[in-house]
Image 1 (spheres, rainbow, N blue to C red):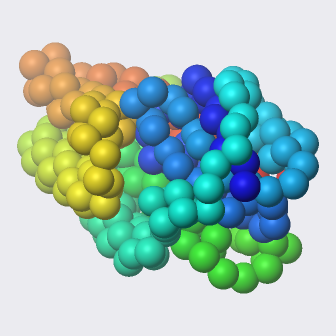
Image 2 (cartoon, rainbow, N blue to C red; image 1 turned 180 degrees about the vertical axis):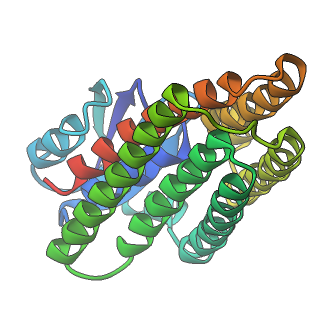
Length: 265
């Protein structure tokens, strides 16, 4: 058996890890995967031709490169077992999806596009974990179809959000409820912290503990951005801070949806 190490410079959170797993699923030559996110390193245990693996990883455009390949014993596969991964993915999926419902509901009730946008970011995470669960079983064709539907659904929601932001920029709207923005975003921040804890608990390598800020960088920045927008709405008595943070997050979600669509190719 061979062990090939890849440097994947754009792999900086569990979402990229999930997308790589999805892309490589179904390649018979692969016997196991190992991820070192802090060091942007992917280790593939495989047999036979490496070409198909390299092309699949390169197709994700994560700025990847093959570092080295060496012969290893089959005993190393015990270290890369995926036992228990499905249970973990279900937990973080349910947390993200629950907060999608909470944030999109409170976002519309409080007239906050920042909360609505953050809810879509939670939905995007839930979709990624859901796609990872599909990698446990099922046909490649089925997985690709669901990935395509998920990507287009996310694009539609993000475009709706951007159009709504433009409408609110141009028209008259009541100020969003800054208290709801701040309180709900704090709870969303706690939820992201819980997801991080669950993800870290599944790792035995201490290097992954050091990656906590990397794992949640996007989600934490978005949560803090909505909290800051709520404060600025209060201080400036203006709707614009909320609309600006909403625009930024909708663009982030839109970019993520295109990444999901790449998995379906």
